[in-house]
Image (cartoon, rainbow, N blue to C red; front, side):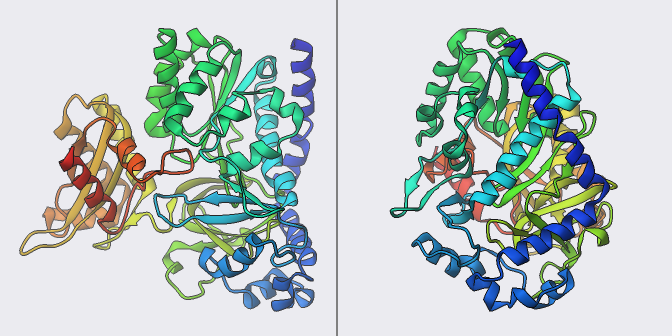
Length: 505
């Protein structure tokens, strides 16, 4: 296995030169992909509608094609779901990634072309391993297996030629045969629908494997880890899998979970690698082991634009191209892809942490914020505040959500938080004060509203019982890696719903 590991590591590292190329020439690479996408789709129904044949520059493209969201593309996608082809993209679309992103009842079906599978999602997966092998040339990852927490839905057939499932299920069903050999558990378990049974089966199926890497959302990885330790009677995961060396994560901020992972995997040599992979595309990879920034991947068949958050509510806001963005400003991402998404706003917000090369961090969602009083609190602010409060009170957070408390009579407004702890703070009121003061330190608008409690009072924080969020998601039939608790909301829908459930328990 050592020889095979050396061969795989060498093959993976060969891609680094191409990555360095787009880091050095970002505008050329993006321009080339822009023309490639426009030329490819000029004879599709969408391409004819906007006369792609006559579009010569990205500026003309921006002037002619309005910014889209799922609702505006939905009529076209529904026809594709019924088997029509050459609508948004020229090659046959046979796969759709079912995505909700939040606990919303409405599902999105994102078209996944063969090109987006090969040139985006699979390429991203290979690049992730290339970067790891380059940063850790002495790795032994390929001497064992990768434990993958797969999708929460079976692949379903829409018609004779079309299928859908969540993204991980779609990827697993299309992986080459050799990749299946290095993955555990087998597909029958990885694609199970029932997440409660699935966690038990995954633990049973993997405890005797030589697991060298784990990929999955932090929350569900912790659930699985606890099942494994319960089954084996071991104290930590290294006693079960002594060769474990890499954890690949994404979808949620890792900071609140870091301390729990240090306890589960007590090794300074453990490598943590974050990726930014969504149903719509693979966008970023943490390329430096000393930094949590992610390299924006520019040669995956995606043309990027960025809308400043201050313009997000305009009817057709001006979008900036890569060369126009600034450091540390919040932008909504707009993508055009080789899966047939055109000027599509995916709903995530990012900040650029470096412009040479282009590195980013995810700051939240365009719809997940609290701005009931002009405070403009985003998820990044909340994560910083919670991380600081946890560090200073010894707490560990499992899940949380927050929403506004509206003005009533003579009382000021405020924010109401529901937090479920894995480890309770040593002083709950101190935790709340540190969280509040950190929010004031990182967000001047919040600080101004908190002045003498005039517009915003001290946060109201509920210490939720164990399994509150798990039971809430379960009650809505939303268990699984694709479903996440909405962290912040500008209305009380989620807070009130969870509080009502807590009363009835």
